[in-house]
Image: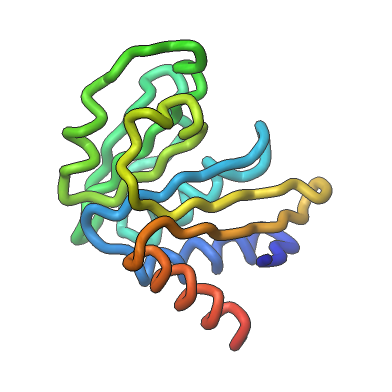
Length: 153
């Protein structure tokens, strides 16, 4: 479990995580409304060198951004609850980009078998608790590296 005490901690977590990401990585961001999923997406985007403002793609569902070296696809699947629609997710999952998905439970049947899941739990207005779950060897290494580096600081 990772304790986030303020916005600076969330920024630091996003930077540290981004250091370990590469093209094709899939990150699922889970948490209640207001937990900080989009905020974390903004910090990851900034760390990737995205210059445009990253906001919730709730009405577009998918927004793509160009970073310094990598593209970023940011998906918000909240509006897809109770939908069977496939919006061409495979094309995004096979792209050479980092993919962030908020509300991924609504497209569970379309998700690849391997991914990193970041669960953000709200403790109060400023504090969050983050747990990382990994599906697949590659993501297990990312999880272990991030947790080790955070505990060293």
